[in-house]
Length: 405
Length: 112
Image 1 (cartoon, rainbow over the protein chains, first blue to last red):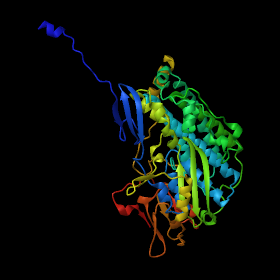
Image 2 (spheres, chains in turn yellow, purple; image 1 turned 135 degrees about the horizontal axis):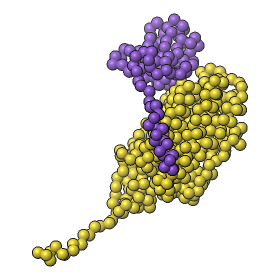
Image 3 (cartoon, rainbow over the protein chains, first blue to last red; image 1 turned 30 degrees about the vertical axis):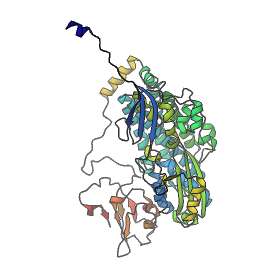
Image 4 (tube, helix red, strand yellow; image 1 turned 60 degrees about the vertical axis):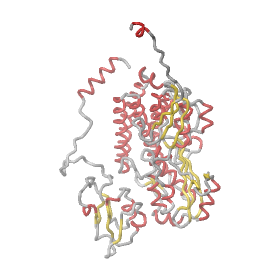
């Protein structure tokens, strides 16, 4: 009997590749994305990313409406960067119709833009804190975000969908009492942002974020990632500097592009925290320079009638990165084609090199660190079932599709 | 972060008033909303001239015509963008401060 117990059993565990499905519905993910992760023990060997669970068909819907109705439709592509979407769309229309804007309306556009950037960055900083299990910081950050949302409610009348932009200007003016309120809130937020920056330099936070989800400079360039994700990898891209829109050509000296070279989740969070201060500086500069003048031109209906047939592309720097709008109007108050390239589309590609080589436990932090907005990034591919072929459309085909209709 | 700072923050949080506000359903005791707040549509039928510009610009198909050449609003579809109030030449439409629009009766959501 004793012999039997002394005998050491050799357990053979086969550490071969295991395929673990993650999502589309998973507690670690905020929005539906399907990751099929191939692992050996804890190490991630390969990732297959699939989108398409929340496709809403907004681009097709836009083709059935007139321009003013589409303005409110594109605002609802994303709740967090709603002002960026309307600015991108309206800028393209103004280019087609050759509508010139007053300086005041351009400055007000930039003001809301920067407030929105702060709101979005605080949102993501909170999410990062939540993903690493630091719920107190999450609550603290979102409490600060609430102050900006209150400002939005006072200035535009709504917390999330501001509807600030309209054809040929903006819809709500900023009175001197509002300027004072914005300044007062900015002082408070600046103080809290310094506190948040201090907490993010804590050892426990750094241990959880440093070296997680590394996307080096060359890969970032190759995958064309945009926004804070690219700037965290040391790639200097910022549409506000490169192709100034709204009032940014006058505000060029009031902000700088924040760059970090460590290329991990910590770097991306740091970029966002430092951009809070840049946004605060920008808003102060805008309020100081705010010129007098009208905020919009004439009735929207009249302007809508004037817009001829034509096409235009516009670029804006949304909080998450570069946002591209391609608009083709039909000259009868409607659209032939609307194409939106949201920042999440290139950024989601960066997930693969980030995840390969890291551990399973780092997936939620890595996915959150690129600030994904899945519903913005869902696109359709045309598959012809009879011919069994997939059609990949390019710009030329898109134009032809517009002409055919 | 240092231990002293953490203790200071913890004590401050304990003694701090809660940041949440009580939700009171009685009118007059509710949270005040800013002046530009976009709530339930208020419609002045007398002032309406029946130009129907609001129908042309409404993004969600809230507004329909009535037999007497006026309009009626179905609030259950409204996205509160205030485009109708902006386009109205006689200011017959404005967005009020009423945000409590949940109801069990569908008829309550139709403004005429």
